[in-house]
Image (cartoon, rainbow, N blue to C red; front, side, top):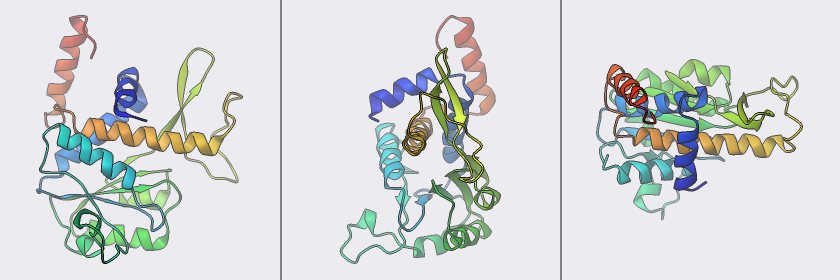
Length: 225
C-alpha cells in the first residue's frame, strides 16, 4: 500500500470506529513520547517491525517531526549492520520515562517478548501495542490497537475484528473473503499505514478538545472533517 492509497483510505474511514482508533493511537504516540529519540519499535524475534518503523520514519520526517523519529530495537543485530539497524536489546535496558515502546505482534507473543516488555514498563516507559488481542500483551500495554478487516457487507464495506482463536474463531468470514490469512495480513498492514499517518498529523500535538472543536466547525461549514 503506497502513501496515496493509504491517505485515501484514511479519508474514507474518517468517522468510522477503525479510523477513530488508529487516529487516536497515532496521536497518543506523539503525546506520550516527550524525550527526543524516545520512540522505540519492537517485536518477535522472527518478525521485527521493519515495515512500521520505515513508514513512521518517512511520515514523521516528511512532517518535520524530527524529535520522535523511531528506532527499531533488534534482538541480535549483526556486527556489520549500519547504525540505524544496529540497535540491540541494550536500548531497552536504557529506556525510561518520557519514552514509548511500540510493540507489533501479529501472532501470540512468546514469553521472552513479554518479559522484555514487562521490564521496560517497570522503568516507566509507555507501552503501545498493535496485536491480535492477546490478553497478556494487552495487560502490559497502556494503549492497544487491534486491527480490523474491511470486508464487503452487501452495501459497501464494514470492519470486522481479526483477533481470533484458531479453535474457536470469533470472526466468520463473509462469502467474498476466500483467504483469511491474507486478509489478516492486509488488516495489519493497513493499520500500520494509518497509524503512521496519524502520528505525523499536524494536529497530533493539539489537545483533544481543540481537535474536536475544529472538526465540528469544519462540518458545520460543509467542509470534510
